[in-house]
Image (tube, rainbow, N blue to C red):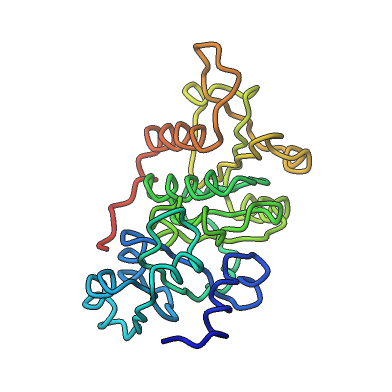
Amino acid sequence: MLAAGELKRLRALQQKKAREEEGRFLVQGKKMVAELLASLWKIETILATQDAAEWVADKAQPRGVSVHVLPESELDRIGTFEKGNELIAIVETPGELPFKAPAQNELVLALDGVKDPRNMGSLIRIADWFGLERVICSKECMEVFNPKAVSSTMGSLFHVGVRTGVDLVEELQQLRDNGAQIYIADMDGTPAFSAPLTLPGVLVLGSESHGHSAAVEEIGAQVISIPRVGRAESLNVAMAAAALCMEFTRQCPATARAAAPR
């Protein structure tokens, strides 16, 4: 049984301040924990009900990860789900990724002030679906390790490199200097279906409320849009990302890499 002080530390990981101080975050649920254990991410420990501990033991043992059995009531205090907190992993937050020049046929997703945790998670999942190796997040973006964001990735967080807290203007300029074409998604841009898209490229998506920032606009990127046929005022940022990534994949098949064994 874990000591009272240790349980208090784990409960605090629901809060951003504690996650940053501890360098730890929560991964919850069977699917997410299974994806985690199949990755190379560092796991401190796993907390589980008796039934969940029996399910996860064979998967955790080869990784040398300890599994602690706790009462459901205590797991509910540590986890963030309304129900279903039977399996929770405590995971080490990885170090910040360094700048990397774009590969020859690479598409990079860059997020400019995305604030909603579920959108953040969905965008990482979309990047994974379309074979993008990395996502870049401006310093104004939602924290990637927020429990809602982590859960919304459905495990894609462990497959995609996410570089966070960057000065996006500086990052985009560096990527362009290294050969990438910068594309900004905006309702008033050139329809993507008729715009020739090239790689390496960076697709910039702005915040849910305000779109891309003025500072990003000033770098002089190509502005593209999703053709609108109906009367909807706008699209969710994750929907827009999926539509545009699909068009990049159609025009530039090299963006779709073969799925790696998991």
